[in-house]
Length: 293
Image (tube, rainbow, N blue to C red; front, side, top):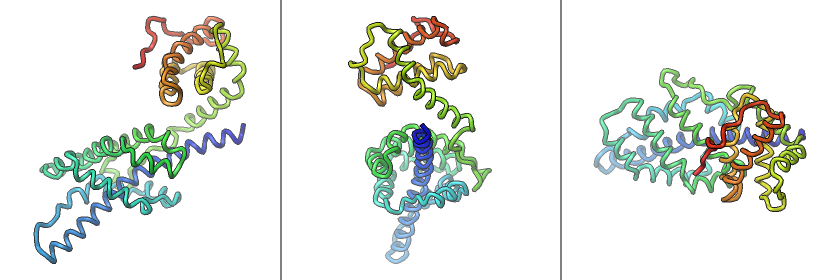
């Protein structure tokens, strides 16, 4: 159990590593853009022609991020760098320069910090969040990162939006855990799921007399066990929230039909737990059952 819990906490720390690494990607792209401007400037001085714009290469938000103390300290500790993946950085910069978002920004007279920050928020959502080449690169670096990226992307976008120039180099990044209770929640849920697995399977069987474990995807059983653990261990979390969360997990990790099946089964199990006095919190009426497209 102790070793398994250490693995869980390690996987959560790897998600935070990814958060930092993706913030560092913005810095790496900006540095490469500056390098291109310097090369073109040298050539223009030698051969003549129009000087290149420095607007993107010296993006006001990206420069603040580049100078951020917390980001640089973490990168130094973890020895993380994009130097070994410079070809990907260059290709991403090419995509950026070809995008309409970039062209509109460069043509705009708005040179405010807000405009510079909004540019990177939009670029990240369009060109980084849905980037198959980046997904493949991250998978090579860590087995954990592909599953984490969708969630971590939301953290990066949130960080961009909250980056305040008044804080300069001392802007706080998002913490690995919102507070100590978050870490305790993960540990408590994990232990409850593992230690009570047999009992939870009994609840599943009692709630549905037609239960046939042999016909279920193993991941479906695991997902429902965790959901039951959450229902019984955390009285402050509404049943509706728990069911929605684990239906979404089924969409990601189990079979195409699993989400609908788990939705119905968790509803049935929740009513059984409530009716037998094992769970003392309300269950929504059947007609308000959650629909998931």
